[in-house]
Amino acid sequence: MGLLEVELKEIRRDIKHFRAGKLTEEKVHTLIAMYSQTEKRMRLYLQIMGIAAKNGKKHLNTMMKSNLIGNGIMIDLSPEEIEEEKILCPLKDKYMTRSECLDYSGSAEHMDSCQGCEEGIANKRLLIGDTPVFTA
Image (cartoon, rainbow, N blue to C red; front, side, top):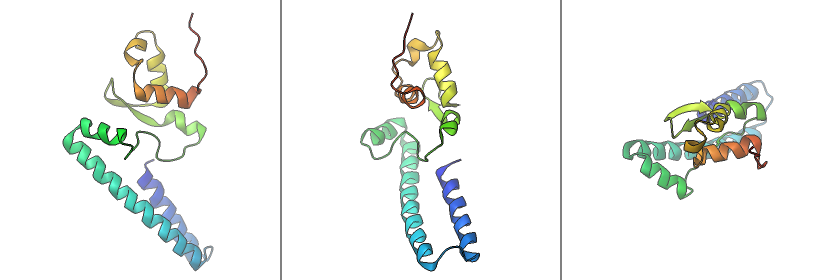
């Protein structure tokens, strides 16, 4: 589920709670201010992605290197959900789950081609940590 969907579900939940009298007016004003800031950042992110789509991956990579945007998780996921999160495989140019990436990059036939992949390296750290890998 994307960040926009999560935010919309939270807003709808809070509206129901307010109507049911479970939220005070002060709490509602605080939530409105927080959602407003989130909305501004989502708009900026969508503009950046539009620019990247129009101008190609080179500009997107430049924005990521400048730390304006990241190439990681935007929503905190539980450990169970992390393995099923979809990431873009730069080698195959398609989306796969993190666990599929780990299996694919760990197979003997793909190990060399996946060795320098930044997404794969970050994925391995996330799923198995900095545990040393033993080879025979």
